[in-house]
Amino acid sequence: MSMILLDYPQLAQDFMNREHETFVNLMIEAEDALLMGRFTVQHFRRLVQHSQEHFAHEEREMLAYHFPAYPMHKQEHERVLATMISLLEGYEDDQNILPLLNYVQEVLPDWFAGHITSMDKVTAEFLARQKISAA
Image (cartoon, rainbow, N blue to C red; front, side):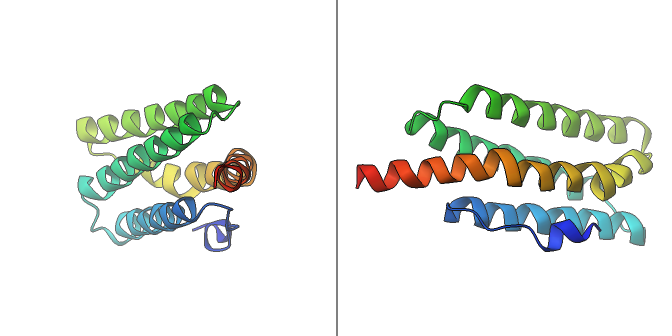
């Protein structure tokens, strides 16, 4: 597992930090199961489901506070979810764990590291400012 996943920055929104922690734990759990030969499709389904719920939560917050970059951030969420769902369907068709292993070891950690330090950081800071102003 990439060390990036174990040392990611905390953001200005507690809900994002909690959900990111769950996301990282689910990635690590899926990777461990893949590497140890005890993987079931439920490992990846939990990661996909959590991602869907987390992205939807972020998107509701962005809409509620009129975040200007909402369309771009939402589009990135949709792209990642489409990839995850495609990988899940591929695994269900052929039971080949290699694409999933590559994804949870290489692709997803790299994406997460970039996403959290760019889009999520900007979003969290914007939401924090808006919530202070509204209080």
